Amino acid sequence: MTATLYVGNRNYSSWSIRGSLLVRQSGIDCIEEVIPLDTDEFKARITSLSPSGRVPVLHMDEIVVWDSLAIAEFLHELRPGAGLWPQDIAARALARSVSAEMHSSFGELRSQMPMDMRDQRSVPWTPELQDEIARIEVLWNACRAAHGRGGEYLFGAWSAADAMYAPVVSRFRTYGVQLSPVARRYSDAVWEWPAFKSLAAEAATEPWSLNLGV
Image 1: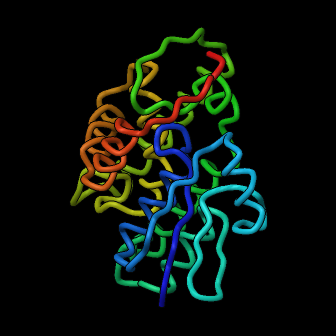
Image 2 (image 1 turned 120 degrees about the vertical axis):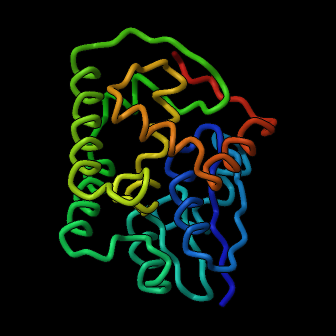
């Protein structure tokens, strides 16, 4: 099977980072093609590649998967031994729940702390933003307490849940968020995950810059 993952800029596209981490963990032979966001090239190509008009989108022969969580589930079915979801049923249910919450929530974090892997920034913290950061710490601490034995990640070994929260780790570093000891240890481990380090290195060398408005 021939696979291509179309993504946006490494530096700015948190969902593209998630898609790349999932593909790399799965071990499938996959080309990753960056289409720069907010460019004429992106506008010209994206509608023919992605039904939603967004990235990431995975093409595998005649199959098109255009949502990060859908990509996680598709790759899990394709490569069940890759560890994208935990083996234990209770851990797997929690991993899917916290991943879905990341997928559908945290609008203040997204808008007030836009993704920028290669810079250090400072923004005012609203009460709503503080509440979302606190909620993320609660989730991380709960996953680590319940299922974190045997590794440094949310469910011990690296999983799709860590891929979903890796861009949050990057945001927290960019904006200097101070974390509790458990959350800080987890954040440091994610930052050192080889696939994530590789993506951060790729982001550092990208020629494109966007005005984030912060």
